[in-house]
Length: 82
Image (cartoon, rainbow, N blue to C red; front, top):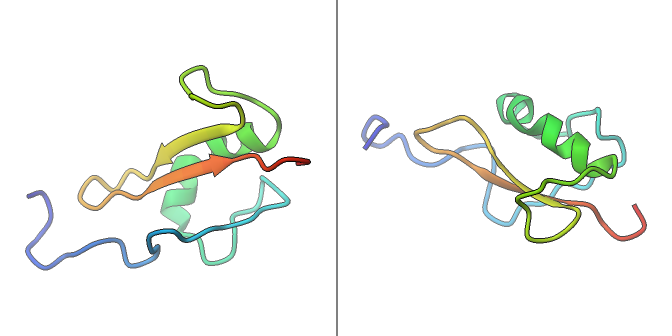
């Protein structure tokens, strides 16, 4: 246990929540600014056509915010036609 008792899970995001972006440089409305600072470069890479060598599929990346006590994992996926 690394967090104080009763600290709970992240209060900003919920499981299955989705954000759709047209501009990879702008943080989506309602997004946690600390999490955005952690994952923005990976989001921008995927949105601009880049790839990650460790990914199982092209156009997909998994990132995580740096909150070690209650981290949130993000799947970034380039949609067809994007």
